Amino acid sequence: MNRRTEIKTTEIFDLNQMDSSFIAEVKRRSGVDISLCWHCQSCANGCPFVQAMDYPPNRVIRLVQLGLRKEVLESSGIWICVGCNTCSIQCPNSIDIPAINDSLRQIALEEGVAVSEPNILNFHRAVLQSIERHGRSHKLEIMLRYKLKKHDLFSDMTVGLKMFAKRKLDLLPSRTKNIAEVRRLFEQKSTV
Image (tube, rainbow, N blue to C red; front, side, top):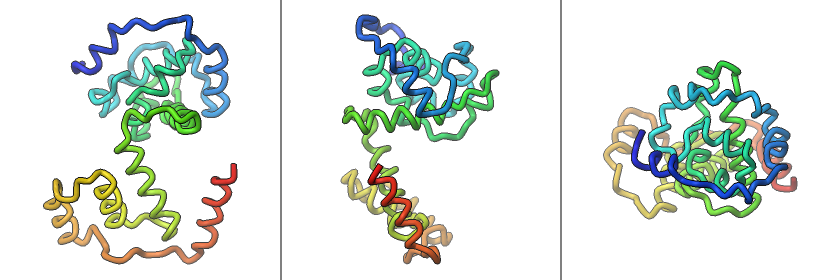
């Protein structure tokens, strides 16, 4: 357990701030029965990114169960999760933790909660913008947009050059045949 996690484990929560409807909202949005969690910590033991999180996956679920909306939506764990499903595979109840985190991120964005990991959100947005524009992702464009937003163009330039040399980065994006269909998907989402 790293220092960041240790700080959060000793934190005391104000249970007067409980939102009793929160668990139902997360269950409805994610389609996952959060009450099945035994808090055995198998998810945390399997997560390759748990050391970077303020709350491990099982603790995020517990905070949702307790209705501690603010603590959950402001946590870094919901943003650091990459959706690899290692936690769900480890879980004896096959709880789909990435689906829960997706729902929590959506709620946080809808409610205007300050995102604890803005660089991760910026990266997600760069990927989506590339898909909307070209129908698929264009790695070079994603990297450039992300690095510009972060104001950090040169820190990993050598990695980018190696990827380019190995033909992992195309200068020009490839496009899907039916770009109008992809753009229609984005239009539908923006009107919801």
